[in-house]
Amino acid sequence: MRERTKAYVAGLMDAEGCFSIYKPTPKNGKATPYQPRIVMSSVELPLVKWLVETFGGFYTAHRPAKGQVWYQWNINGRSAAPTFLTNILPYLRIKKEEALVLQEFYNLGDKQNPSKRKELMDKIRGMKNRECVTTDTLDGSVENKLTHAYVAGVMDGEGCISAAFTPDNKPMLRIRMGNNYRPLVQMFLDLYGGWFHTQEAHDNTKEFYTWELTGKEKRESFLLQVLPYLITKRPQAKLALELVRLPSSPNRELRKKLCDAIRYLNAPKIQSVLIGDDESAPAEMLMA
Image (tube, rainbow, N blue to C red; front, side):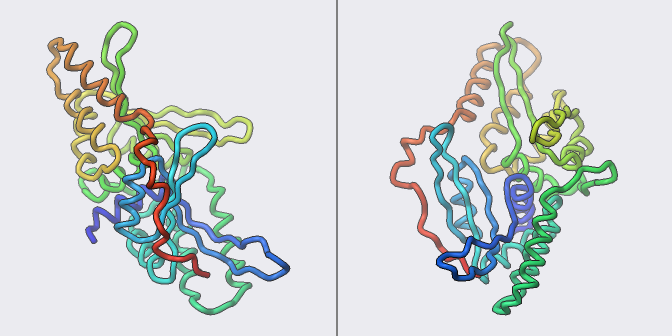
């Protein structure tokens, strides 16, 4: 497997994935074993299918009463899940410690050791409430292609490449990424420039940070660097690159055509085309 693939999926898991350990509610008074869990959720069915084909596991479809259909990829089993963790661990930045705890859980193998399993469950749960302190930093090099592969994974998970025409008929391109972990947003800023906005915490929400890239040269450079590694947002990135590279001379019709094409790609998918493909048959059964 290519290192670029591992780095990309690490970015995807840092953005939209989850590593956890849980204990199902006992049934009929019988004790239940602790269960490891590796999942990634997305509205992009092709991406979820690609994960199944590349790493194994299975996916399920979820149809809420309101909103878009979304899919959850699950990987487990005593072989596939540990192999997956080994592949992406070197490239994880945000959830590496959680993945290491899960790896330790899998290393227990057939040993029951309920006290150790509970200890690991409590440990990984405590990591979910990560605090963003100013001393937190994430590594990354703009000269390293694997950094761009990781960033592409984050963009496919939590990024946005959009375009529209303003009320005064001017094209507006936006390249953004949002996350509540400030060091990740800071890494994007350090690598590619731009700026970020902070949305203050309120009610039960955490502070949220949105990175946005502005400027023709910076946008072109960013798109060129991440485009080879993008999966779900590659078509938008190609159109955005074409839009950025247009000469300054007015060409309203072409600009509008490109903006409309990007908007179409970002529109919710027509779910009728997915009839008969609700979910795949599980490739692996969940194992303790």
